[in-house]
Image (cartoon, rainbow, N blue to C red; front, side):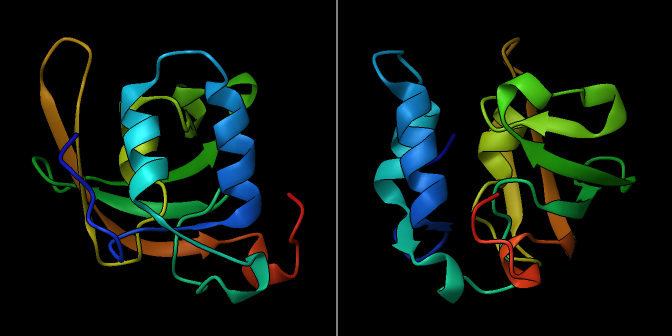
Length: 133
């Protein structure tokens, strides 16, 4: 995953804390780099057009133009075939903290590159008053 300059992505304090605990001694370089490079804000201050944990959003595949609805989740809830993408997957890490309209890029374990534009945020917990999800 390319370097992420500050200001390009945002996380809530709670998401940052929970994701930092996921790392806890496990080497997860992409997630570690993302956590180090993101701006962290209070849950009540996150813009409603940013992908936070448990957000539902629509992406447009960069290669095929295919639209797909996804939900960013924690590893135990992942079900890629049903659109539930783990934050620890290359796709999940690539999308976390991005704003609607941004383009995400990621590298799959086999080396293939992928990418998608965040078309719209369909549901964000914080925008709906859920600051603890």
